Image (cartoon, rainbow, N blue to C red; front, side, top):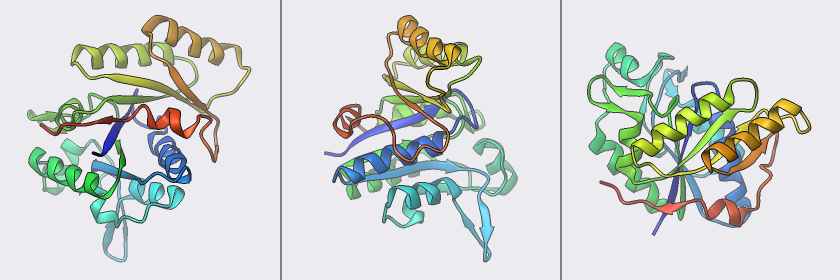
Length: 229
């Protein structure tokens, strides 16, 4: 059965797509059949009259995923805003049943599936209906939290961890992005997050990194069998 993990963040522009690409790349380079899925993507670029889901395209190129883009993302919007607003402006609102079916289809193609969220764990997906947490719970997955390594991340990570726990969403680990090894504050951020939350910082990623500093088997162990609800 396919094992999955959901990559969320402390907010938008935390580097989720960059980190996700490294995760999928690491698994694939270890010989594992690893793929990618994203429910809703905003801010797509139009090329030759067609919307191209940039996040999925980036992961596809960096990680060497051969799945067609249309099978990697369910909803693609051109407007660079939250999915709930993008769908109100453009039409085609997110339907949870379709997300679940598309996620199951992605699982049928891979042994390990990395699901990338939009924004943070409380990103609105459809006004008055779905938040990001609803998609995570529907897939039955635990989360990896991507966060910038710098000032303010302690507050943001702890809030995200505590919110996930309050919704019975397992937190598998934290990844600090744009990390500067030896920086006193960033090193303290890492240790404080672990001490306070009990959640391991499983990797620290430098800007422009081409490989994530963790072993493939340790990464694979974070993935779990999801039960679509």
